[in-house]
Image (tube, rainbow, N blue to C red; front, side, top):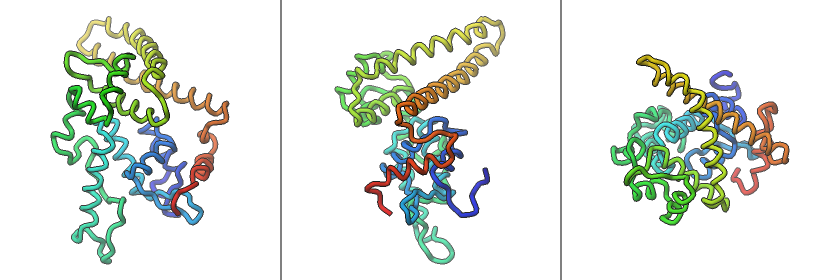
Length: 270
């Protein structure tokens, strides 16, 4: 696909096609959620469809990379973007014709793994978290954290939680908005444990090899297997939803995402 179509914008299905190579779990729903949270502000066509420019796609890549690579909460990412937007709209940053830069469309972003957050903001992503740090970073309650521990979704080592705890907590917080309770997530935990056991069995022969690079190779192989298992898991869920008549549109239907976008237009501003 070319960097930018001749018409000067991308439809939501074209944005998904660009992002899926690096972010396999991206979906129409996630893009809509990021818009609802105010992190992106795509334009709208007269008919109400979302229209993304190249800067919108760049912005999405930055957000998704910051979530995946640094485990940053959306509020931290939003603060970073706000500072970048403010810098872009400052008088010295205006285009040569004197017009202010378009709000929500900064021209450049720092790499997600070398952003401008203060050390205090970035620390939770790189270090183990205390109970209070996890609660604050995920925006969760004490009660929810206790429930997640009770049902085995979060575990402490000593007084700290591991680097994956923030992602688990953030997902659990988001799911509570749909009425999902911690006890409902036991099946997800059990499935993850079964998949992990399978991956461990597959890399076990590598670990038994003698050689300085055996453990590194095993780690790399485990990561590749994990990505494939997650992709398969997502495809199976998507397929099951499609059979139930709940899918937003498959990859084999180029304009299905636009149809889904149209169904979600009620109440959207033109």
